[in-house]
Amino acid sequence: MNDTIAAISTAQGVGAISIIRVSGSEAIEIVSKIFSNKKFKTAPSHTIHYGYITNNDEKIDEVLVSKMLAPKTFTKEDVVEINTHGGIVATNKVLEILLSNGCRLAEPGEFSKRAFLNGRIDLTEAEGIMDLINAKTEKASQMAINQINGKASNLIKDLRNDLAAILANIEVNLNYPEYEDIEEMTVSKISSSMDNLETKIKKICLESKNGELLKNGIKTVIVGRPNVGKSSLLNNLIGEDKAIVTEIQGTTRDSVEATLILDNIILNLIDTAGIRKTKDLVESLGVEKSLKLVNDADLVLLVLNYNEKLTEDDKKIINQIKDKKYITIINKCDLAKKIDDENLQNKVYVSALNNINIDGITNKIKELFNLEEIETEDMSYLGSARSLSILNKVREAIKEVKQGLNQGFTLDMIEIDLKNIWNLLGFIIGETYEEELIDQIFKRFCVGK
Image (cartoon, rainbow, N blue to C red; front, side, top):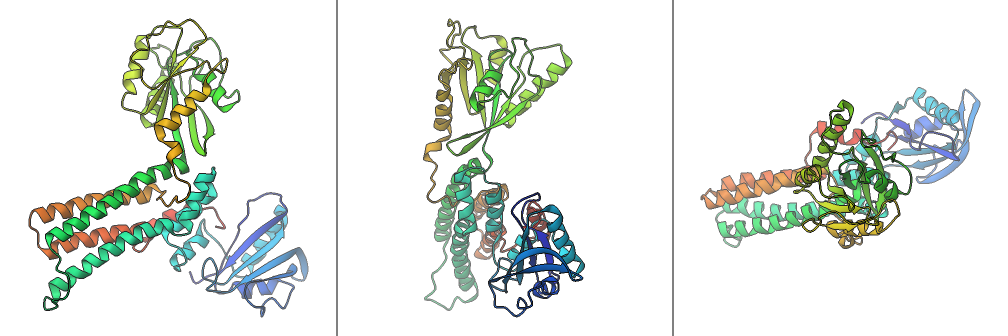
């Protein structure tokens, strides 16, 4: 991190302005070489200056340049931001001049990576930045902001502080037994502490499932045999003719995807090929893909025909999804009833073609996922699969500590397992980390962030 990096931080294309960000120990020196305003170099921090970017006395663009000195910057290094006109040619030319004068083109996420390595943000806050950029709903945005503000990090820091207190007492008990005024760490006290820690982690994991819904949405698969109205239902839900609708069985041979936002929750809808026995090779491949999508789904919308009796294909699909969250959508309810629906669960009667009771589906989804109970005031949940995976390892490690206590392990052996938990929690916020992991996390960021 001894060099100075530069990158375009705004989206490529024509716009009112573009911003080129420069960070590093030589940021001020390099920009001073190509900036016509000679007062810039000696100007105080956090000031904006007007002038031209030049190249061998040729004016390249009229700009505003912000000067921010370390450590009060995002990267905790000297930072310069050049506001150019938004033309592609002018922006790229300014960046080219910076690179020819000593800057290096920043890698994806390198500004955020430097902020992390310099102690400006932790890993949870860094992931919050990426989540904020990608947020598609207001709730997802609020949760990301709380991550950036450190609310999610504080959950983990509090757990580590509790563990640190236990470890400190164990250390004193083991190495300084003469200190009689120090609390003695007994099996009962450590066991009680583990119960408390496990309860807190369970709560974080449970609430973080809501965070996962907010960020990534509900993967929703529409299934049923051919001609029950799956494609009509998809088109009705999203309000456009996305899927082809005909009376010919097997029209949908591959999945059709669309997105619906329901009360700030994203539904990633997938209309699948009709599931039935078929000798058509292409259609059979579509059926096979449909079954795989069902296995991976968070929610299944099973579509049946109100005007027909249940078939063997219907019954096989019902058996296939019995362990999933699903809604039984009985379509064509405006026709004569022939279906035997007495034993069907989570039923909603609709007519996709005539727009009857489509709201009943969305209401049932809210009910199944408790969407109306998801809090917006304090969305301090962990929103990354990486963090939740580590928490699951912590839960397993807590079980090992409890087993050790039950089996009469000595304090020094228990201490090793407790330190392992403390280190695992450190991986979530980046107090402990591996270089390869850090590289992988920040490579997901766009260039210039």
